[in-house]
Length: 566
Image (cartoon, rainbow, N blue to C red; front, top):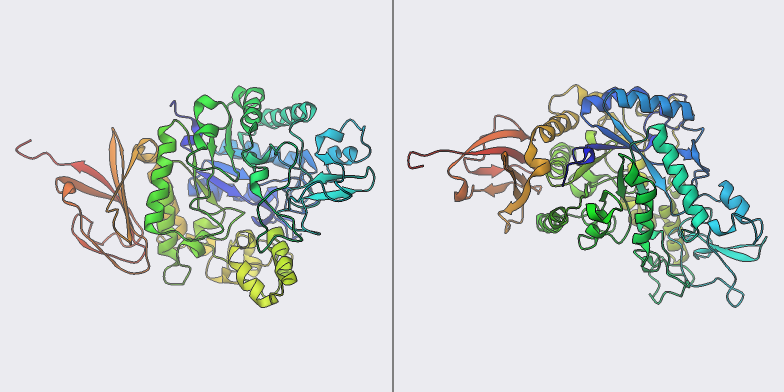
């Protein structure tokens, strides 16, 4: 594969609403991002990804787009965005946008026209169906479980239902309709002409629906309501999805030097090459949820090895993927996969970062991860904002679950954990805003904030700087093969990254207890140069057997020693 710029990228995700507020309205804005670009440059990242900042009524924090060619006034103006693009590019930082192509807001001009009449030119931009026996067209359920739980909403103006897999105010677009597709292609090219360097494609596997809209036969689960079933199999990886993505490539992406990354359910190491191998001409890389899994939030050394080995086969097939553990849709990675106690938060945060930045793929950092931000738990449902959390809470209330028990269940996996305002310092509202923040600040901001991290050479932020610099300097991390050792260990994750120019050894104690470590005999003829440790540089190098501290991780460059016999 001819290496592309995005294979060497370190991507930083910005959730603008929670990043930095400059006008005191409690909502982060583009001028706030511009003011913090020097911090990101210092961190070492070379690409930022914005979650949606388009004009939106904010039913789902911007994933309900009302105007695909404008910036939401809460964040600033299109001129502000152009200034941001120019400033970032001058710093060597590329900018990619989140593109929501499965659905729009019901306040989008297209939908306002579509619902006016059955013969409106925009009618087929969306998916409309007549009633079936006076009721919904089928038993498909919405993932947000609003209203009666159905994925269909009746519109009195024309007497038909429209499909919405998510919120009622987020109708699904009809990718079967060529005029809609052409309008989307024109819009994407408009953003690229403006200077955008690529797109993250939201729920890209769901653009195609099961023809004929048959009922699902899957039985309702505990959160489905009134017999309506949210079954991803009805709208995920449906035959014809590759035709849609190939046309996107030929009409837009393949003509320009842009990066595309697909996020969607149903992507596995088995089918990822069908989407992301170069010969397919669809997208550049994919996310997967086999590590950052919201339903599990647990990784064991055995699980980590298994997932990484499986995905190594994807890279062998000339395809590419993302390495991440947290984003705006998840809880905080150090709380889920590490240990967020005062004693172990820093070493476990550094360990997780090392595992992701030294395995194959493009690492994505989510804002706050680089200072070890943690989960939050609010006392009442009124303090939560996430649509999933609210919908699941009310579904649990209907089934007789107490408010406290419901919050106990939902809090650890709420998307609001990741959406609390960025913690810049230990002053009011963590330095995020001079007004009232749109979402409560995590109360641990007094101890966890960037300003404090900048004062310590051993902080999480400064460790990320070293890690990112090391990744840029080490060809084996991007180009090398992946080989695990000590695979029987229940505590230690150890692997080699090898290319013609370099061999690296990464050893991690992925546990909260000390782990006995013995270097395998096969490395007896190697000289060890330690490149990185998340504890004290004065610790003996692992060439000498010793116990690994809780969550200790070490990175070494190995060089074979020439003996007299050689």
